[in-house]
Length: 252
Image (cartoon, rainbow, N blue to C red; front, side):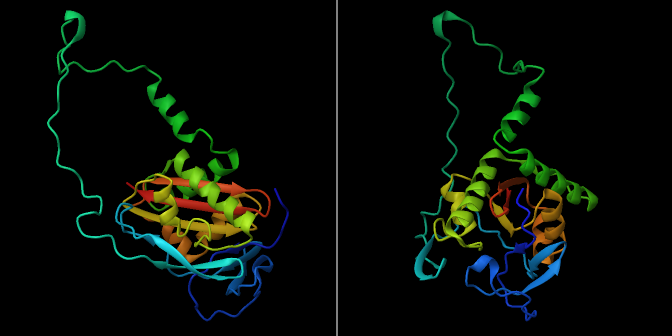
């Protein structure tokens, strides 16, 4: 991993903290930061999260560009009646058996291979790197310390988180709001991720899973995301060049 000793977490609020360093990776945007855990973190008292479900989350539209940063605004609200209301349940249609074969009794349990659970677990984490899995394991360890259930590693969500980290690295910015994808909640939805609640933590510069998870736990807003009881799944994306980290959480 990159041995860059400067580490940052995102900041979305002006909390009046002394500016320790005003230029995060030369990006031209000032941030209130403090030195902590072998690096620098911004101060964020509120978690970056939403309780608006994915089918109702309003789309964002880019309307102003400032250097490498884009500002987004809400588009017009989705008209009533078009907000992804669930369709009425349809009666289940039974197919007639083919070839004159008798249909099995409805209450007969389907046979499941002994290793089906293991196979499902492997499929759910396929594509998640060792470094990313370590972040997930450390995150779940923190949840267990606080009496919370583990988050399920989600490969699809990790793919979104990884693309967010790649986007920050490639476009030289550090923010929840992407000039490419909009907010993380837009991005999740546009990648086909459904959620009832969602949240995001980002960081830059930490050199290991241990450093980044400890940094998040030492920051009030990021800690809130990690310890949110309503979240059920987690995705993590890591880019080694520049050490960009993204945690995405959803509750289903």
